Length: 288
Image (cartoon, rainbow, N blue to C red; front, top):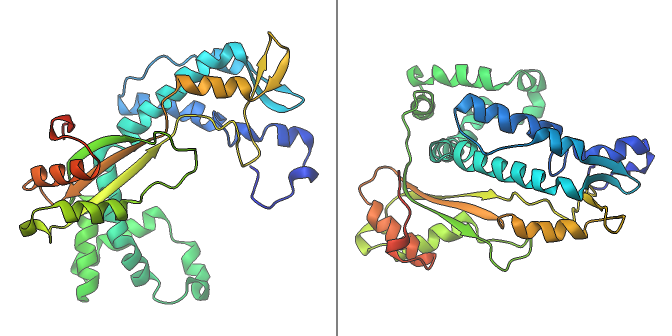
């Protein structure tokens, strides 16, 4: 994988050519996990013609290249991958747990390593997901109040007692925005939504979550791994056919959700979020 600021010209030419197999629009990894995870999660995905996609992937003088005939197979795969992200990796419950983790993980690490971890690297190197979960599992019986509080929060996560409940959900499209342009942050949206709430709910605790979905390969890949297309009609290898192909794929999307501790104020939060996003109440999506 090409690293920013690193001179890859000293690497063997074949290694530079094959970098997109590890980091690119479709890689050995995501060609595997899309079908594997959908099967294991019981999610029905659309047709994915992996044999055709692999067959029409070639190496030309310019690098990693797909034959123009293989673009429909790439389209099917990218749409399937986006569907999996929408319905599994970015599922509302998964994102709710992520919000909960963000609230407590920093304090947890300070509790585990009150000093600079570089002063106790032997212990820091043994920290794993497993050891962390086993450590915090016993904090509910700790004598220290702060540790007990964190232990209680971790207990909710481990017992799947979901703290945050989804109040509102919609999908945002970055219409008219170039790839890479800044999009308002979830903190900015939260501030605007809070202003739109009724006065009696101005102190209501809620969270805004934004999960980006971008299925499109970048014809101007800044990492130096663009996807080239071979056009048999012109016998040319370039990124131009890819730019035309992008019109067949969804634009960059953001799954926008608002969470609160319960469903008591879903209507007010939905109305406020819809106002901020210039949506009408009738267009609000179902929470279930």
